Length: 161
Image: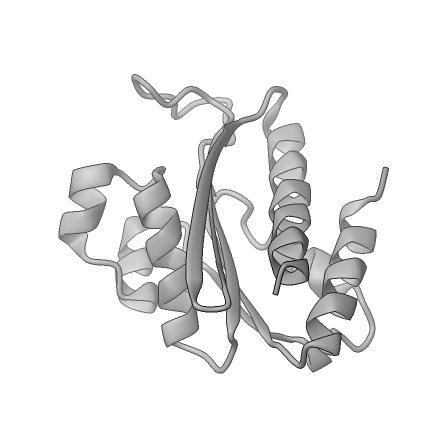
């Protein structure tokens, strides 16, 4: 099984071969996706920037997410994951985006959203994709699984274009 840096390296090769730049908007992973990417020498050829928008105020201020959307769906939702990815793209030079928002734990669960609930957003080829997963384990494990899944899924979408 590949670790997150190896996953990011495969993703980088795919993006570089297509001359695409990536941006990342993270909440629950706190920069973990960006860290995996920037561990790779030369990632500046395919990675533009990352936004760590942990608070709702930063999601609104940096990614242009409407307060009303946050109030309607909550920060941990596929709707917000989509808006985060789209907002990141609108604020940089990249053509491809991924986002993560979720409840890594050990607290923070709400009805219908247990600890380990993660929502993902990916924008590839002008199409926005979202997904909700529930990962098991402690905070560290949930965050690691989230980074790995976000990179794997994005590679799959990039490979389809």
